[in-house]
Length: 417
Image (cartoon, rainbow, N blue to C red):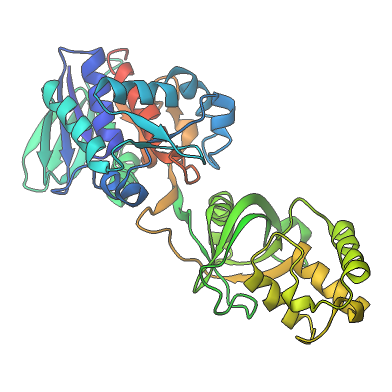
């Protein structure tokens, strides 16, 4: 059996390794268009490589995938984060868990992961061809069930193989190959990005962070209820020079990726800066301040778990003079401050990117893939793994886990068809 893996990223290498493990007599080769295999592994996590997430329950794990959560339930039961940890430990790479559940190599260096994958490939006699730019892939029926594939490269050379793993990430070329072999491609859209917000409440406060906020994103026409879509997330947030970022914002961007793309990244963002509270509790706190600290100046007496710089900003914008004390707080100011704390509305008018870790939604239509094997339902002998599928996860190691899981199952299934 001759296996060609198109794409030398995490999914490509791991799929080749899985195929070699399950079918040791197979001839396996990886074809990478660039001279830098595993480049996304290299730059991920700020160069540390967020290998996976410390979440070993498949149902809980699936909840971190805006697209693909139904399809991944079975695969995660077969190869999940625990299996990923075990595989790397067998290669001499220990992983550690950070407080937020992200898992990194103890070396804090992505080169550790790259070396493990490349060394394993060398030990398995997997060929690696760099600068191998595929021009086209054709499939010809050998008999009633199997295809023989011809891969043509840009230098006009050709090879034949019995199985192909397409693991080209979000590359347009990979989508083109899949399309030419009969698959529908769901149009791509950015996922995991920051929000551009121009608002005086945020001006000159870059770097101010919030431990926990509750976010509600409303996308679509305010006057057409059916056309509106609402997405919710909670967690840490960070004010930037251009708007808002942080884990909660990135998660929200992933879930709202397609809707935001359709609306050209115009939306309303409603923030509750005190998710453990509500308007009644906030007003009660104001009453207690009036009663117990009537002479204290409001702008310098922040009673809530939010940064003092932000408190001063919203107090000043709520038409409260710097010298105003709690005793002189008007009912209108109470209402204004309460709204700013519990349901502040911001206009999103664009997106930024999340460092170098650009993630997209879109890809091969999931209903056209058998998730028991990751084989195409349309073209026998064609397999998919990783981001080429219409699957994407939120930040935290989930996109890599999708790559490990789908590629391992694809590699293990290549001798079954």
